[in-house]
Length: 111
Length: 115
Image (cartoon, rainbow over all chains, first blue to last red; front, side, top):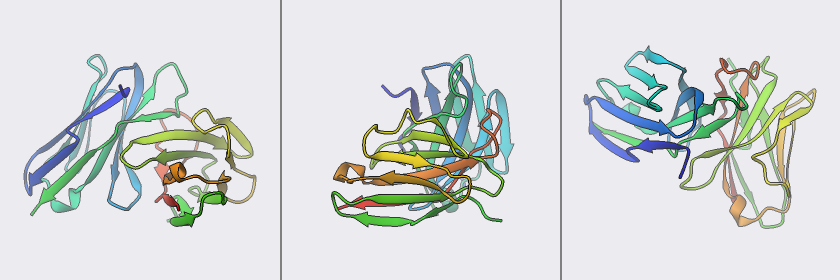
């Protein structure tokens, strides 16, 4: 069992819909990243958070350390949001640079 | 505004050949991380380097793989005697320091295909 689990694996939405991608982890962590990977392209770091909530444009990330759960929300989704979204955890008590990745959620937003 | 640069973007090798993957970090960043993404799998940590030092290579196969980050020039991930199972996307990331609060900036990746 992967230490970092994401759901759903695949998500298809219509333009304008509100999107939620979930990430749960089984180990204690000190922080969590949300990353975006476009097909054939590189990886962009969207957020790093260790508590609470962060917002950037139409993207919102939340984390509940006690429940070992984080969510990424996209409001008013757009076809250009189509990408793989990856959460990555930094284990607490260990090396604070080493990321453990989920397998990613493939989001497709149709016009 | 140069981010992390990797080259080549695509690399094709035959079994038994050597693959050299290069990573130039963001200017001023002295910490480099290499990750591998196998087909249908998530990213996995391979190695963490600072200038001229390997800090953590716990994710790197013990044989055939090596990494360096010299004082001058890019970081190099070297795979000797490649096998088909080495086919993957290799991503490099950099950060200004190795602390928790740093964001890691990722490069575009090198896609290695072993024939």
